[in-house]
Image 1 (cartoon, rainbow over the protein chains, first blue to last red):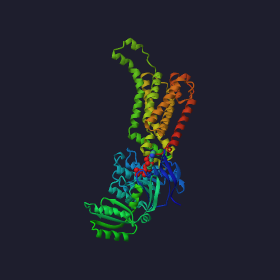
Image 2: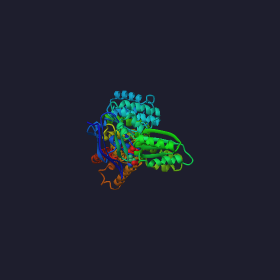
Image 3: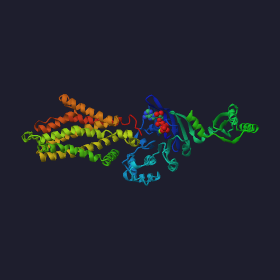
Length: 307
Length: 258
Ligand SMILES: Nc1ncnc2c1ncn2[C@@H]1O[C@H](COP(=O)(O)OP(=O)(O)OP(=O)(O)O)[C@@H](O)[C@H]1O
Ligand SMILES: [Mg+2]
């Protein structure tokens, strides 16, 4: 039985369709990243999963039950992109309140709150009013309230984008621990973050899933030989013209010029290397750099995002 | 039940920390004691100003205790109401659009629990303010104007509490459906239109919440000939329940922003 199944989810805001019929399933355990550029529909999707926004059509089920049911709601921990709290409460009071709403009794709620506040690094600020918290502290508090009742499914909307490098590191480590016992779905627009803690990604663009799967499988799928050639600029522009000319070669699938550097996606690394190096030698090209490597998921993601 | 109580406690704590639990009762008490004090001291004040001849001042009718209490009540139906609606317009809207409701409603909290706790918290504030205020008005009136018939005053106060529950429920509903100030405007408009219509054709609207105010004044004006108020009381309570239900029904409809 899969923990979370999403079927043909559609959300329209007036005439705009923010989410265009997405379907996916999450198995118990592990971490999945919802990856997409601004406006892709990540927040909208997560809000529908959390039961805060009703879908125009389609369904969301946890262990076969709808998320509007009370029983399944207790299994969700949700961190909004910009969480807002009662500023007049202290951090500790808020987390205790949240735990109480999820059915914990006073003593247990207080103990759990202390523990989780320490975990997210808010121990010293726990007795201060939330109105005096910084943005990053609020993000940590948001994480604390999402975790305090030990949910089985965590929905995190950009959990690290408001944090400083140190905070980011801490939260990433925390997520690493949590993924042993919890199913995590987090949204991000940074592939690097996804690669760090998640084992699966779902790539969204304009409300549609453009690619999904295991990160390792995807990166081997999109792995292609890549040549990076940098030349010195000469007054006649001979070297640049030479780089341009690669566009017509049979072994070049794609050419991207960035100033004096050409990125060549090639079909056959052996031939490409041989031909290009020979030409460079024969025509005395002012080569600065010649590097053979492979495209990464990042390039694929950038392509998806920009097209 | 436990969750409702928890949210209710949070509501009360919030009103304590943002001083609503202080300033609204204070304003209400001021509102209540102004009538007995001013009608007692008015002749003296006029005399001191020296503009008006003493004979004229003496000829002013001195209001009796019942009249003063009726005036006190009419203050609540105007300024008191305005205060309640304006201080309550963000009751739900504030949380719904401010994003704090989202983190409550993703938890196993039913819409009805959230709404009922909100209603109960705010109604408590209104009742506390009203009881303090009405009590002080009563005290000063007995002191300055004469004995107030306690049975009638209590009955009139009770009818006002019921009418306040109607006003609070309506404000709550508007605050769920609309954003802050629009909620206040609509609530005031509905209650205003109702009382204007009731003023024009009282017999047609004898069942309406607005009629409670007339009955309450009648208790004090003519204690012998009090009107039976079962129908307007029942209608008012029913409407309150209806507003609360509609409010909890629509809470999640438009989507909870975060
Ligand atoms: N309440 C709303 N009313 C109208 N349109 C909306 C609403 N919420 C979102 N949208 C639209 O839906 C689309 C997706 O928005 P969403 O917030 O889900 O994007 P996102 O992937 O979370 O982006 P970001 O990375 O910027 O957070 C956007 O085009 C946005 O304009
Ligand atoms: Mg977003």
